[in-house]
Every structure is written in C-alpha cells, then in structure tokens.
Amino acid sequence: CFCQISGYKMKLFDKLVGKAEKVLEIGIGTGPNFKYYPTIPKVSLLGVDPNPKMESYARKSAAEAGLKPEEFSFIRTVAESIPLE
Image (cartoon, rainbow, N blue to C red; front, top):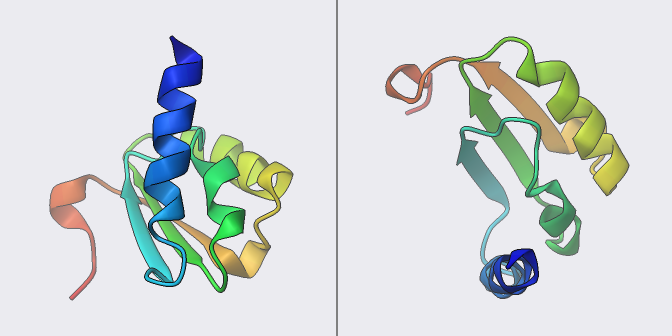
C-alpha cells in the first residue's frame, strides 16, 4: 500500500532533521522524495540521474515541493562517475 510506504518515508526523512544539511540522492528520477526535504532546515540536495530527460521533471518537482533553486542541484551521470570527493 502506498500509504504505508509514504508513512515509512516520512519517518525516515524525519530522522534527517538536524543531522543532514547536504543530501545526495542517487537515481533522483522525477523527484518523488522532494516532498520530504522541505522539512529539513538548510537542506542542500544533489540529485544524480543518468537520464538527461529527468532534469526538467526533477527541477519542476523540486519547485513544486517548495525547494528553492539554490537548494537543489542536478548532475546527469551514473553513480560510478559522481564528481565528488
């Protein structure tokens, strides 16, 4: 049931409040988890997806969820090639 998954995700993301300011989400897709991020103060989200068509959907979903443009970055790449330290 979707409601069980949603409840589980809400509890999971609530645990990030006060602990996570930078979040890396691999396989961001269209951004189904964006609705959980605005509850995390000062969050900076980096979404990674290899599909170039996902960026426009992800950016739209981020804005609809209340994330500011400076709070969300998108990198088009596969997880094995993420340009991070």
